[in-house]
Image (cartoon, rainbow over all chains, first blue to last red; front, top):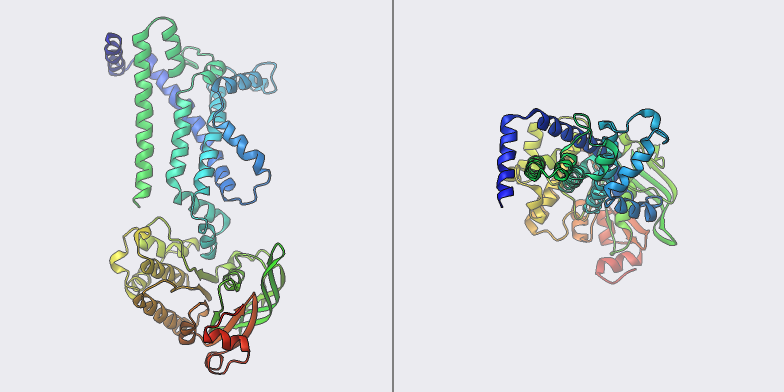
Length: 233
Length: 239
């Protein structure tokens, strides 16, 4: 109990003091997670919509289970694969992305993408089956049809984004392996928590955890408000 | 002028032929009523006419132009359908009304929108969520949404089934007015032969995917040529 109280006090103090190291860690966390989420959304939402709208998706019997499997990818395994690809001997070693925020964004994008694709696909598949026919009868192009369908299932799309965000902001395995937890370069909230715990600084680790949870809450609150505004239109 | 000309049009799903029409012309500006028992292929015919699916065989022309397998968007946008169970978007009534106009990249004319809302008794519901409307109100929204895009051809698939007499009357009057004011070609699929008689210039009977008889409305009802037509109008089971 005392540790928890200390942790809360430390969290408030760290934030109030505007601790430079902490702000750097929070900033990098948001940059990496935000970047990965943006990439996953840009690719995953159109892809999930196309898959959901396609009645005769070629290879659906294989692709859909693959996507669903991807939704539960272990971060540490993804981190390992990305590490091997980005390491000096790896096929993408020349890019020099290992132990950089860019490499971490790549790893988190891979984690987030199947979640966005799979949940968007499910949301689109749950739409009234007569909607596409209705939209085409009103003169919608394919692009307009896909966009309107996504707007109709905006609650499901928001859930996809929220799920992906939650998965990547809280993961540690991929960013630790690919980023290396280098101070002032690749240290994010989750890797900092691991480090401080190992050093026995439980109060600080818990404080970082509380900050992480607060960030997650603020982001989810924003998503919820955004979706709610769309719903009430 | 001929709005649609169908020659040897067939639509099959697997080995099941749903529509098999040797010859049919839909004249510009007319209201063509299509009646027939359930499963006759009437709704499939409307989907073919709205270019929502291609015929398996045969030639379809639209205002003199051959309809390609992938009709261009400009052609598709000249035709629209009001379905038996229209899908309203998860938006307000007003937003539903202007949706088709928006698809065409045009700004809706506020006065025209207000006019249709007023005409169809929807003014008080303009800002209400469309999904909360009753069946009759929803069907009126769907009709107004279709009319706002000013289609050259309006296809109506059982637009008043399961509606109360007030809504039936309102929708029927609107169809009559549109046809009179805009010279819109209307193809009306209905189970209700009395409705076909009230609204249509010509009536066609469809059974088993085939056209049994097509004729001017009065003659179709008072002096049908085919025995199947007489039996259908008597209320006998025909298939």
